[in-house]
Each structure stands twice: as C-alpha cells, then as structure tokens.
Image (cartoon, helix red, strand yellow):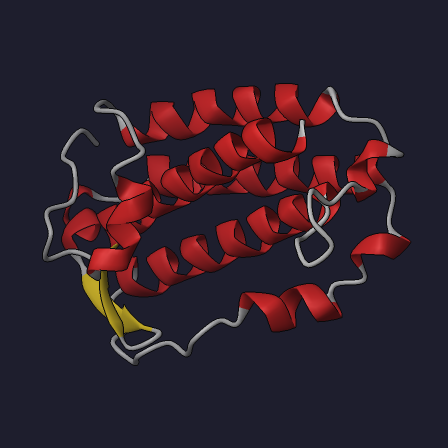
Length: 170
C-alpha cells in the first residue's frame, strides 16, 4: 500500500504522526520499524526501564506500555472500519490506561516481548487487507479516520516515541 493518507482521512492532530512516516509501502515500513524499535528496546536494561527524565513524565517502561496499548487501539480501529462496521468507537484516555496497566509490576523484557507480539499481529492484518478496505472510514474519539490513516498513525506514533526516547531518555 503506497498511497499516503490525504488530509481528509484523519483529524489534523494525527498528521503529527502520519507526517513522520516516510514514503513507501506502509506494510514494509511497519516491518522495518519493528526491527528498529526492538533494537532500541533491547539496548535498555531492566534498571534503566524505570527512568523518567522528569518527575511528572512516564518511565521508559510506561512509554513502551503506551506504545503497546496504542498499537492495539489503532489496529482495532482499522479492523473495525475495514470490516465495514459503522458504529463510532469511543475515546481512549492514555493516562487512565497507564494508571491501570500495572507497568511497574512487570519485567522490562515482558514489555519488549509484548511489543514484538503486537507488531507481529499488526503486520499480517494490514498486509492481508483487500484493496477496497484501505479506503473505508469511520469515527473514533469523535474524529474521522480511514483504515489507511490508522496504519500510518500506528507507524508514526512509534516513530514519534522512538525519537522522544532517544532525545530525552537515552
């Protein structure tokens, strides 16, 4: 799938993620990005995973948990719309999700393994979509999305947080 989403396929805010994705086949980009992200994560040890660059900021483990939550969310939304469901989907509160996730009670390796597993499930979902499904649209969090935009958002969201991890945490 090589067509980038146009500005009608997601709310303007989401283009902060979409615009971080390079041109090319989004499925290959997601696959390549998985290796890049895992390389970064595997360079972090358990002791470092609890690091916060400021007291009110998430730890590295919380950031990866957030990536895992959001990848599930973006892919579920894409699934919902790709399969032709038309009911709007509810909002997602990332802070509520982190507060309930039990991040600190888990090993760093479990977060990394979860990222690997989730991305491994995301890849075949998008790779096997029928061509018409990429253009299907729906509403989530009171915002419009196309299936194509959600694939780009998934990649752009990880790119965004990898950049923040490199700049502020590592």
